[in-house]
Image 1: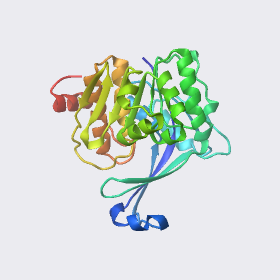
Image 2: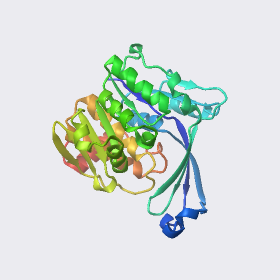
Image 3: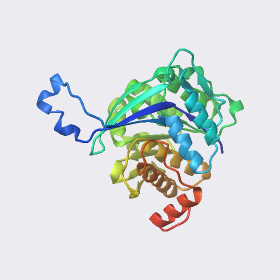
Length: 310
């Protein structure tokens, strides 16, 4: 089952602050906020939700199709995708733009402050989903606003099941628009913050939203995750990481595990546990695409953590 990944392709500029934000952002001074953080560590990584999800699916042995937009500075990313064996058929270069750029500062408590320049991502609506692509599963991940709306509509019209992953793009949409996404989607994936915001915007509890879907996935960091499916709540334990190096891209790794499990026909327990494992593997490496494991190693880690085979 080939999976279409609609979402951002971006460069991540990752900085590490050797302190804690809470020690410098004072509540009583929040109305005149003016802070600077010395970041002795700076790395430029390949990122973006579509890039990260596709990378993790390749580790799992899938052949994902990426749909996204990039700018004039995309040569290094093109070379990267080609080395990974990811086709560029649906990656469009938009002239006179820059590829989306994230500027992420992480403190010692793994809190993050992110600034994001969308650049070419704002033109994601120039890509169209057609039946000729031959995909049978998709995800609409954070991307340009118009592109997310359009791609969800196109997938629904074609009858292709897809996961709606609003991510950092959730605030761009009204409650009515979010409910329209839910009506069209087959699955929804949010973290705990996004879940609360989704409830506030739509006026509906996640359990109620889940009734309109095959499954709703809620990640809660170190507390594990929850899958609402078939009228049940399925609690998925957190997988202890070998190291906690960088949370950037963990959510994308988790979503790759979900997509792989769905495509493979796994039950929800196994799908959720694989997703949790992929997030755990990712957090032990810096950047969204620097972890490297074989399929056999993933199977071994799964057996080690859950006492059963994939």
